[in-house]
Length: 208
Ligand code: IMP
Image (cartoon, rainbow, N blue to C red; front, side, top):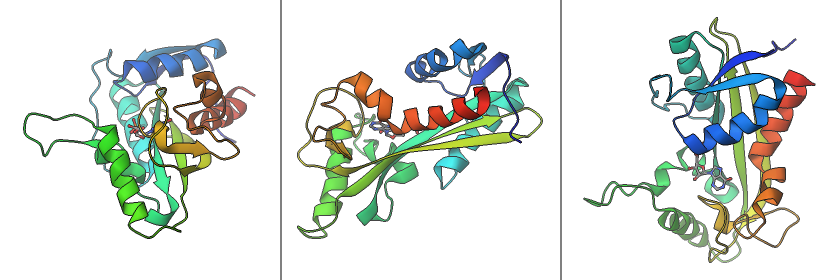
């Protein structure tokens, strides 16, 4: 049987305040007090895994070991079927502009263009299937862990459409919809996203 979180403190292994807010809002109603790895001064480990599960576990374990408190981490990204699942765990890296001196930072339009270039380079009839993944990993200080995997299937479109959301949202059309993630009402996206899917599984097993 999977170990349960119970109530008490939980470290959210992120230095991103947006993620901390979103995750805390989902978990605090279940009696957990969420603390951020950033506010505890915990180190940010290198994401050296080759799968979402490995990277989520690396982050959760690093925070649990350093703090002595149970920790939760997430890892997410976009996979394209015709690109053998790329960019996958390298989704954020494909947006890095570090090679232009003085313009470091992430450029999502460039990243979406790179994916589109690789896809359309395979010909006009290439399948455009893609999916977003989100893995949530819980690590206890004694080494035990649990993982929950969420996914939303869809297809890539070009050119990008919509102003809402972030990252690759403007080129992703979820299955059963005509709008991109960036054109959908954020509440609608959040109810059926890869992150929602992973959280539903976590909540069902941990608090069901
Ligand atoms: P990480 O999980 O913080 O490592 O982020 C992985 C990357 O995947 C993000 O920087 C985004 O580019 C992308 N990504 C993850 N979830 C979404 C989403 O819901 N919409 C658009 N892009 C996403």
